Amino acid sequence: MFQTGDNVFYPVHGAGIVEAVEEKEIAGQSQVYYVVNILHKNMQVMVPITRAENLRMRRVVDPDELDSVLGTFHDGETDTTISDNQRHRANMNKLKSGNIHDGIEVIRDLMRLNSKKKLGAAEKTMLDNARQILISEMQLVKGIPHEQAVSLLDQVINA
Image (tube, rainbow, N blue to C red):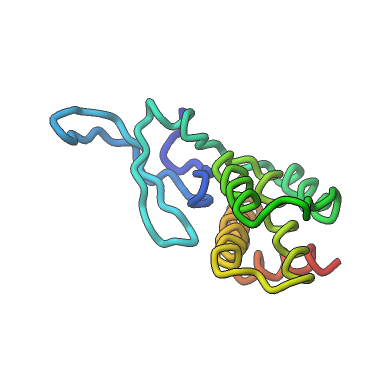
C-alpha cells in the first residue's frame, strides 16, 4: 500500500507523487483511491487501491537500479524482422508492463530504427512518450529538475 507523499510509477503515464488517499463515491459505489500527480503531464489520476497492483502501479526504482538500467541502454539486439504493426504492439505492451527495463528497450529500439529510417508518426509519438515517462522517473529517483533529467538521458543515449 502506498502513502501520501510516496513516489510511484504508473504505466503509460509515468512517475508521480501520491498526493492523497481518499474515498470517493462513483456510480453509487464507494471506493478508496490513490490520487497521483503525474509529473510530466501535469495531471492527476485516481487509481482505485484495489486495482493498483493489477494496473502495475509500483514504487519508483532506487537510484542504484536506475543507474544499472541506464548503464545497459546500448545492450541487446533490436528485432528488425517484425512488421511495423507487430513492433508497435510489442512496444505498447512493454510500456504497459511498467517495467523500467522494458521502457528502456522501447527507447533504444526506436532510436536505433530512427537512425536507419524515418519513424512514422505513431512510432515518433511512442518514442517521445517513452522518453518522457523515463525522464519523469529519473526526476523523482534522482531528485533533479526535468531539464537535468533530459540532459542525463541524452548523455546515456549518446555514449
